Image 1 (cartoon, helix red, strand yellow):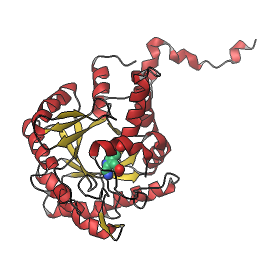
Image 2 (cartoon, helix red, strand yellow):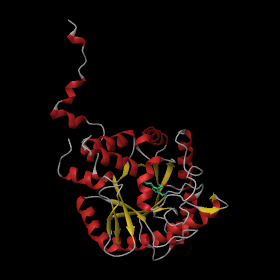
Image 3 (cartoon, rainbow, N blue to C red):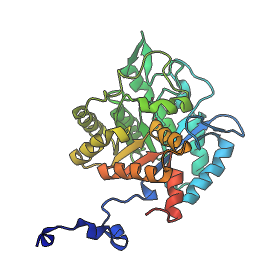
Amino acid sequence: MFSGLIKRPRRLRNDNIRDLVRETGLSIDDLIYPLFVVPGKNIKEEIPSMPGNYHWSLDLLEKEIDRIVDLGIKAVILFGIPESKDERGSAAWAKDGIVQRACQKIKEKHPDLLVITDVCLCQYTDHGHCGVLEEGRVKNDSTLELLPKVAVSHVEAGADMVAPSDMMDGRVGAIRQALDDRGFNNTSIMAYSAKYASGFYGPFRDAAHSAPQEGDRRSYQMDPGNSREAVKETELDIEEGADIVMVKPALSYLDIIKTVKEEFNYPVAAYNVSGEFSLIKAAAEKGWINEQEVVLEMLMSMKRAGADLILTYFAKEVARWLNEGKIK
Ligand code: PBG
């Protein structure tokens, strides 16, 4: 009889067994929620291309942080939109800059919430590039003089972790050194290590008003065709002192997440970027997909690939679903 030869993996897919043998889990502890902070008062302005995400002035941010903490989210990453921009992005390291004030405000009330700050110049320069521009070129080493100032100013304001996203060579080392010199040797660095030049950042650049006025970011962000280079970039960041390494974007780069995870004994973060968020929101609005199913499947794929942490604009929704026990 043939039936005795049939192997039956379906046995483990019964309702009462499935959960017990699931290999990958998703938990609120994995999630980092990005927030956009702006100067002014009484501002809660929805970002049109990212429904459910807002520009927050600090007075209204307070309540939003309460909600985030109530949901059980353990970490946020802050992006600032400054009052004014200049050639070198000096508002990025101002003592009373928007991110610095946000750090102080959040930490006063919620010392246990992990506050991470994005360290970059693109929201702060009038040309919109992530570094200093000289004769139309983004200058690496001149930028390295500025980024540590930004990182130090965030940490002095209370940030627990800094996340350099500019992709200049040597920036992790420069920031580590500057922090250590000031006694912040316990402050960790999450490096955007394998950050690709990606079309998936479109909605974010609207949100952060950070699109380059001229040219693009391909002279410093990675070429989507490369994976060995991701290993090299990550290796350099680890050598320079990164504590957590990041792959960004996530969804089109699951292979990179897996490679980085297998190659290094370090926590890997995946950035589920704005374009990945907006595609799902738009399709769900049209009724073409089931938002919850697709979001969970997508985040699970990042975890399965090897991500330990996920930065995602869906964090609040996912936390709600997990709290309500709606996830099966
Ligand atoms: C700043 C920065 C960007 C993102 C995070 N930090 C934009 C960029 O590099 O153009 C993208 C985040 C997203 O798309 O959600 N350098």
